[in-house]
Image (cartoon, rainbow, N blue to C red; front, side, top):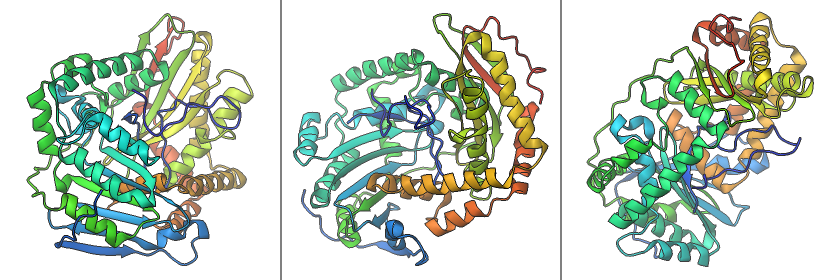
Length: 487
């Protein structure tokens, strides 16, 4: 099934090529890999909600001015609504975010959040799947959904005149899904094909192999889409029970950005969701303990060797996030980064090579991906380790640090220009930080990272004892063991 909110990996020198489903996030809010689905009458005002407004300093740039009026409301049943007006646009993006993902599943449930995401677009008590598609198409809108390890999202993007239609559809698919047995069986087959597609996509598969090894025995190590055995075992009653337990108001967050009126949208959301009583039970999550290992999977039909080399980092709490993103940018986040220049530009050993930060609520990792010829695999690994060693060995230069910080600031500002990206940013900041960081705060945080910060972080995380390597392809001549990973 086509993954949501993704563009194909770059095929030109204008961007650092990377698998399309890899999201390294930004200092504004972390992003993680996801599995996705391609894809109105105004209710009365509802009492029982509290409100707050987040205001950023007046010095924010004109394009980011809408961030000066972010508003948050909490309804009596625990449902949270966050909005951000963008007055220069005609579009509005609105999404329902559910605080459940693959890390909240048992081994037997692995993939159930993703399965339910597929099913919610398959019809409600009053609408068929075709009805939903026709309504969205009739107003030129967009609908989409995706599942990650820690949350699931359903969202619509429409013209401001059609926001009531989007809210009506969102509330209908989230509150009144039909779960028809024939649709369950059909989507089960679709998910089987999605799982097979990952097996046939080496840059996706090597990441799953890495995650399973890095987070060994922990839900974060399981694939979002599940496995053939786990999805086979999901019967209708199991799916309905998980849906009813999970899709409760206290687990739901609604975010919207664009040309909107907060009060009117709050009334609509209140009428659609607030009457639902909350009966959710918290799902305990256990902090993961990363495992240092080397895992090699032979796949002789592949012409390239695909590898992921990663180390633990500090995850989503904001204290170190700016340092992590600056370090990642220096290492392999851009075309001018050390890895891209030394492995691709100077030696021609890889077309795709990059690093990324993957942040979760209580942990994270910084990893490097590269695809190279089987005979160059060992050399590429050693070149990556050389960069780890150099970053630990002494401070980066002032100009190199400035370029990395300027890149981060520019890419963040550009990433927040659309209503859908702002809508997503609101949700991720709420999930991971419990507050909205203003643009000024984020820019100041990036600017505050020093050469000494980067050096200290490098010495903390680039530890051979905590290094995990996953390799996929023709691995016969690789010859890498734990001794070879010393740096």
